[in-house]
Image (tube, rainbow, N blue to C red; front, side, top):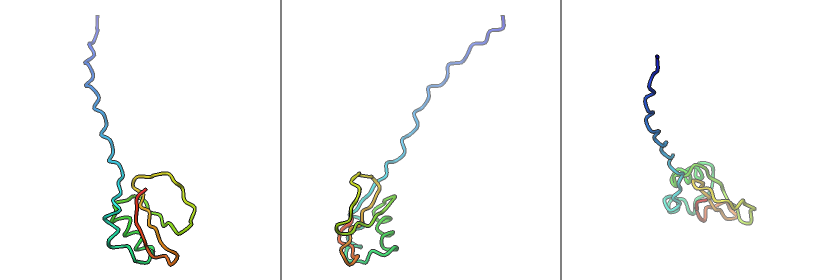
Length: 88
């Protein structure tokens, strides 16, 4: 008697994937190697490399080995001077 016909649902569009975090250490290296790793300089390393997080790695320091795209690693010497900038 009072039947309604269900309209077919529009096919669901897959949600776009969020952009993957990225890190470009080369963008930070040239301006930061040789500088003291104070808070402002470490933050400049993060932003210059396009990272989401940053950590300072000291000589002989125990570190976790997992790779995190978007993490900037600032390597310093025993005087807290930046000797390398990497990602992971």
